[in-house]
Image (cartoon, rainbow, N blue to C red; front, side):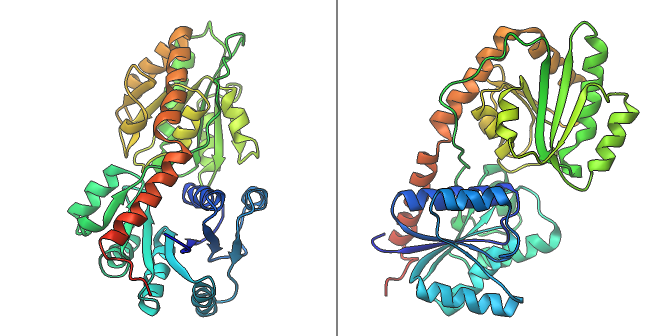
Length: 366
């Protein structure tokens, strides 16, 4: 890559999986001493923790300001000043901006990013247009989306899959001396996460195991917060369920829990599941997205059908009643993260992609 400059473009830096991966990549490029700059299209939208991360890791950062035309002019100027040869973008708007920028900078390699297996129709239209006619390639973080989008007209030769990565702890902390067992979920409070199934499953587990002290910790934020609170009240689970709204120490909380559960109706590659595995937790997850790449039955957890409350209850109760299995599965989760989803592997995969696209003649050197 020589002295190539890499621009990483996000729509915002609010809390989210795409934003977290953009930050991680920017950090890795910086540590590799590559000339990289993280660009926030909506410069006024940045989470405090992400701002601190940028400063702590000496990431070069630029937040764009003004209306869309002014931002685009700023972005084109930035590309020239930074002598950028690669733009990595995340999600629909950033992908489109990246693709349009290439019209004015033919020598740039523009790579979009898609992170879910299901998009609203208008986003799908723009991402398909951008992928097929503007950007050089699109990185999907899951194979499930790749296969589904190819069937719907995305050019297959331009799709590459690179799984997410997280930084994991080196050793798992066992919580065997607690008198209380805690199940945990971390996600946005939106319909596709299907908290109804999770709460009804937990309610049944509580009813079936009155001799055990059980808690369910739900961590996140989003438009369905009040609806989730109503369900907790309707199920009379006020004493057993803790609803934590976007706390600053999520990983610390998760590490102290015992079982992770995800009842999503669709996914890409779940950062939350990966972080739970990185914390050494056994996982119960629905068979959506690339969850089967993360969770292996009877190895580090269980894959369950969507909305199948009885089956979820069965697997929860199995883990609740078998402490040795929880510990074994938790250790396996941590080891799987270390072996297959490390930050080192993520960087290697992106650098390999750059080289591959260059060798295919998609990057024209001036």
